[in-house]
Length: 208
Image (cartoon, rainbow, N blue to C red; front, side, top):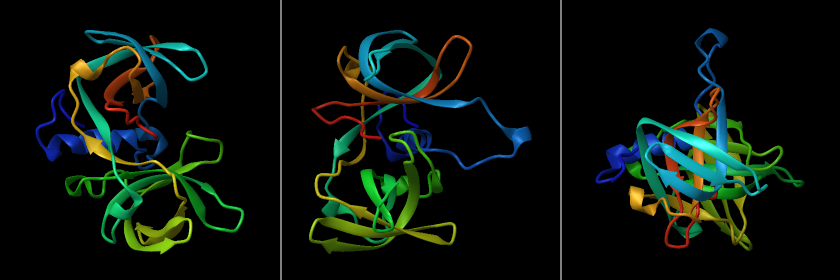
């Protein structure tokens, strides 16, 4: 989803699709098991990226041929409008519906990427929903959005302070020690194999 330098939204489409779950496939069509690597860069060289996870584990990630790179930029909950395509990680709320953990607003060229609602590993029982905003209503504590996907609807509250981001360009020079990354990768015998990397820069980190 993006070349090492992202000159156009066309390239951005790929990184966001992979940063979010793909639609389920039949057993006979299943690809390699997916794993998400989150943490801070220890070192980067060529096709090798060493990452320290929040749990203190050091993970050696192999970058596949043609791997793509992007970053995230801050957005605001007030930027979310009906018709926007978003990816929202959320948890079920005690009062019904879901409460957002983070929101990714896709650029228009990425509308439809990974559409659906799937289990996610940001927190126990969390889900990721990639969907179109049907309506957005401002509330006392943030905003509630109704999103639609595959003919279904889901209502998600976005409390004040919830991280809201969009996709932005990045270059290999941003892969410096201490930079925070989110890497959707494949499980391989030698460790995670990554085709895409999202890196934090300018104080913004990938919240997904």
